Image (tube, rainbow, N blue to C red; front, side):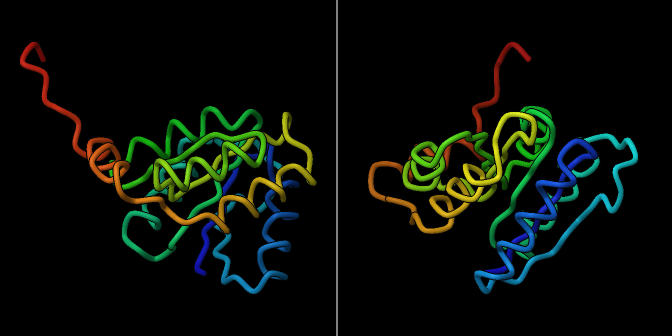
Length: 149
C-alpha cells in the first residue's frame, strides 16, 4: 500500500519509528516531513498530507502531532479526507469499518510507540464495511448548505 506520513516537530520521533515500521511491513512510504525537530506549524503538514491522499498519490495517511488534535483538524479541512484521531486499536478499526477513514491521526505526547503500532495495524487491516455506512460516509464529503449562511 502507498502510505503518506507527516507530523509536526513534537511528533518527529514517532513519525520516524512508524515510517520504519511501515517499510518493514512492505508498504511504500512517502515521508512528507518535517525533517528536523525545529518548530513548524502542524496545519502546513496536515494540508500537505491531505493533498496527497485526496489526489490518490497515497492510499492512506498517517498524521501526527503532539496531541493529534490539531493535525487531524487540518487534514479534515479537505473534503476528500476522513481523518480519525485514535488512541487505541478498536477506534482505529471502527474508523475504517464504519467511517472509511483514509487517514489516521495520533498524538505523540499521548500515545506510546507500541500502542501507535497497534493502532496502525488495526487501521491498515480493517476494510470498510460498506452497506448502511455508505450513505453516511457520503454525507461527510458533501455537507448540506445552510440557508442561514
